[in-house]
Image 1: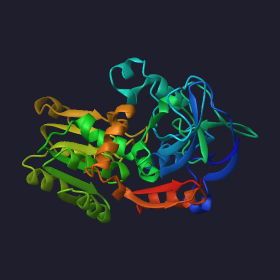
Image 2 (image 1 turned 180 degrees about the horizontal axis):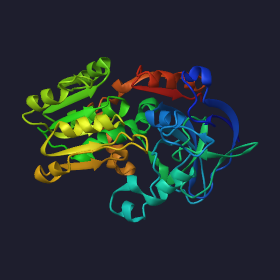
Image 3 (image 1 turned 90 degrees about the horizontal axis):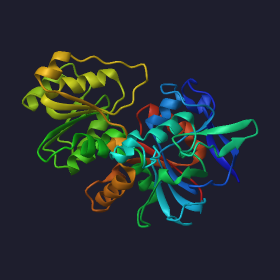
Image 4 (image 1 turned 135 degrees about the vertical axis):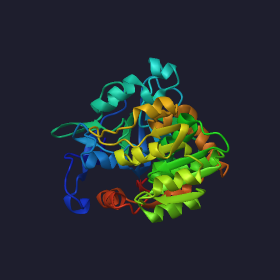
Length: 376
């Protein structure tokens, strides 16, 4: 079938993207689903910094690529062997397909699925194929989702079925921002009631982490960002304190406020300086978690003696250490119960044709989550 899709053919074009147009809306060919695959109609797709990192070249992708990884959709057709989905089912996509059988999947560490991450790195579906093409050849899949498209073919192991009562615009956010942010708090940190949590970097993922900390009963939730407007949003979501990241007295102020540092410091800005700040505000015996996905060349340094003498824990969190089929339904249930007000993360919606302008707004820090909505 012929569909419209946002294709990235060259990374690193100059800003503003409204002028350089790194994403071209093209009419491409989409092949039918193969065995174990599903044809979906994309309903809504979030504009995320992980997409932006492919556009600006911070995290290279195999090109050309049909971009977009955070989405909700409706099932249109299933391939051979898919017997638990039918046409009309609403779904959320996961940006790491999980095979369910590798050593990591067997341990409940689906984010580290070896076949899934290998497929993502190669720009293919979990089964190894590509379903997007144009006159000059195949188009790579972004995280097995290709969310900025009218339709997509995805592997069954990239899909989580959801209930029909949930807005598909809100549901899209659970495919990355919520799963990563809330999961980092609940799965990686395992925050307990009364503990203190600091979140550095208040994008969609960071503010989702704030929501997760509040929902977990954290006694103090400290929000840190360069943008004062985002501190105000974090406080509206339940953060108890807000600090500007550029404040030269940031570290001593937080250590004084918390009696020596926070139990959990979560870095979601994707910058070495942010990680160093997170480590500096973590208490003795505390946990510093990084989930911001900086450029591959980024390095950080910590005083090694403090790891031993202070029994520090440093962790990475990918996809919020989630098992999508387990955690997305849990977080949706919290949303429906009013305990995870994800709808407050939605800044705006707009059509596919405005996608380059949407990335300009994200790059300038003007939105938390802008969602591309597709015509029926």
